[in-house]
Image (cartoon, rainbow, N blue to C red; front, side):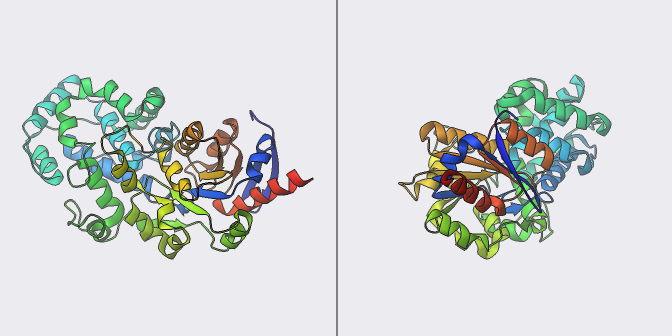
Length: 380
């Protein structure tokens, strides 16, 4: 560990509090949570939806079926731990581009030529047209996992932009333009198919206001999610914070998250909830304000301004970078990392400890223990 931590045990795992952070944690009077991996256990939903989406797209592009199991938790975590692939649309895009980059120059040239002939149309129409006119290409599942993990390590902090700089010159702008990654749901192949697979046809239409294009199944991967937050800790937090001073800063879509959270969403004032759509509306052509930019956290915490100190509770490197980004503009932020609901719990725990975060706990339900510990220790 790079920092000195006090350690205490719980039934779910060990808790760690950084000694030099005790004073700051004592002052916390606002808590903002990430949603996925913190309030919700999403280990059986998002990674599976990413893998299935990538598999469908790659089969349409190449004619080769790659089983979703190839894109396992090791591959998913390799991109997530960079801190720059917070959104699952970005991970899906990375899987697709990474897999295509293993094709030969001749195969890529043929694919680009076919993609260039595809006309305008809906995402499903464009992908279907390409699958009819392209020649088969030979993806090889055996080497794909290693290739993608190596790609995640080499791209590093470059994120999607770095990925495109590295791979699009070989793959071709025609494929990029067909997928239209940066466009919204209903235009982009990546985001439209992902949201259908993730939410199912029923929730997709409820969320976006138009029918699913690719799938017919009413239920999606989101139904596998489990609520982690125990409502019994809310009164304890209220006493510690001096009221219900809770918020959410998440990259998830609002309606999907509300669907999974159910009645628990009522614990958070609407103006202290910041979702993907809220950030999209705010940036309006400005810099990218999505995590790891600190904007979502600053906005959620700002509902309670003025405050002494805000703690952000997250489960990924992107969440930690978000807290640090917010801290560069307002030094009142702490970070508590949770690990038991992460894709790779022990690796995540060590990642947070080596990064010197303020505290590390198994789940969000252990946060009151950390705040109580800080208050007791600073009274001694």
